[in-house]
Length: 68
Image 1 (cartoon, rainbow, N blue to C red):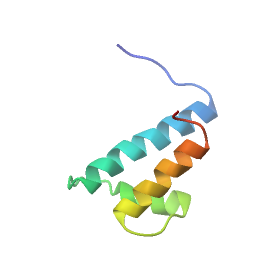
Image 2: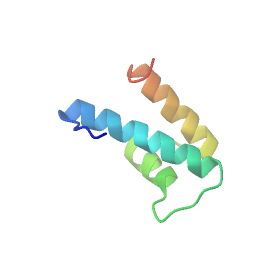
Image 3: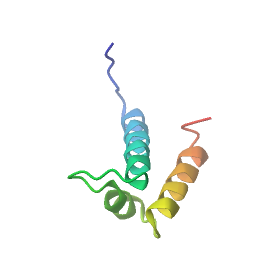
């Protein structure tokens, strides 16, 4: 199954959800070439540990109404 995401807002929302998923994996101990923790902190200006940044990201996603 494949689909296409179009529209700037939809693309940004998909990016946020993807960052959330990868950050959850980082919190669980997975490491990869891309440090999503640093990326989220840089792009959204969040501060704190991985767990705190994940909490802030989830709050941000909820406030934007992306997930219900």
